Image (cartoon, rainbow, N blue to C red; front, side, top):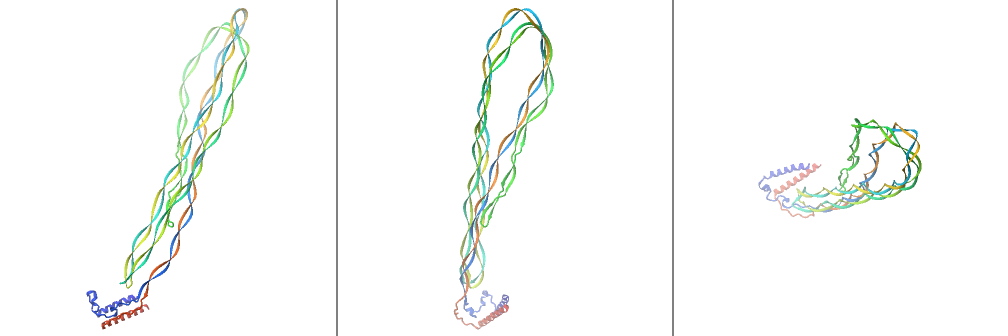
Length: 624
């Protein structure tokens, strides 16, 4: 409010002064000044009563610092191991066998028998008697024996083992670094200078920079692998052998021998012959074919676990990047199936032409002259030696060495290198020269350069080679020895001495009552039961056990100690020295004497003193 009143009064005073002296515009108004000094201020310089000094002031400032705090954190390390699971299965094995079926049928056989009719006669008969002459001869007696023959064989057994194959793959490891970027700026600073004295002073400008320090670390990662260990074990295999045991025996049996007496006779008899007559007829026959059908068996549905990609996050406190793994997703995956071929019997009916043979009976009459031999029986006891072979069974047992594979878990440790980054703070201070004006206050604007620091985050990625174990199935063949036993038939033959009776004819004449026998033919019919074998194909099914091995993945979680470094802020009080400007009174000195002024100048001085007193009174009034 005081300034609003002072400026109009100042303008009035300038107008009053211009009314006293006429205005002169030449030389920018410099000609308006009087040629002689009218006031003492115009003759001598003003008296300096105060001066600006700089005083050192010590201040306490609170500075925030950061100190590293190390703590051990248990970090979850998930790993997947494969464990074999053996399963017992049974599959059906179908095969075809031919079963023997005996079928009985009746056959009618016609035959002719002659029954004798005896008549008594007496006649002289020249006859020939046969005198018995015993003659020895050799008869071969054949028999067979069986003895076992053992043969060693080797059969190949194919089995599948899983061989661990290590496969390397690249895993991207991402981290970020922070490097400072310094930028130069200029800001405008408004200050007041005093003319014409300039004084330079130093002002400390403080700033801090951050530079990253990288440290290489190695952490140990423990994992378990399964190492196949082959173990031998003994398996008892029982088997049996047969040992022949020979025994000598003697068989006594009665032998009826007949002494032959011949007699000539004549008889008529009828014979019948069968002539074949062939006819054809059509019959339906049930037959079929074996056809191969393919059937698709879909594969089993297994559960597959996969982890989704994670992300990297930056911790602003520690300036470190942490990798957060993605979630574990479980999905159902169906394995590829396979085709199974099986034989199917497809029946069908066929009409076939069958040739049938019918026999037509034809009668014939014959007259035959024959000699009737009367057999006079007598009994002889005969001994026949023979040998029997009895197979005696002997049980044996032998130990067969087998091998089995046991997966032994083995702990392994791999060293994984990783890099940590920590930001090191560095304080800087430089002295900046400034200038101040003491005398005449004047508003000026100066441009002050300053430097700013901003942290630029830079993403890095490197490929880390990892290894994973894949179990590759591998076919192997092992030779298994086994022994077979086959019975070998051996034919034997020995000569047995026998005796036979040879009749030597001898002519004699005697009256012999004799009986004649007339054969009366009689036709009879006999039913004979016969058996025939018929092979019927029959399909059978047997259960064959087999063992499958599948690998089940298990995920284990292990707590791994991990050292984490975080920065904890704390406050530190420091003493800072600062230059503070202070106004001090100058020592009083006698001013030099001023020359005398003329009258008009004295009037001007009076006017100025009056105006200054008027302005001061107005200010006091406004303040009240």
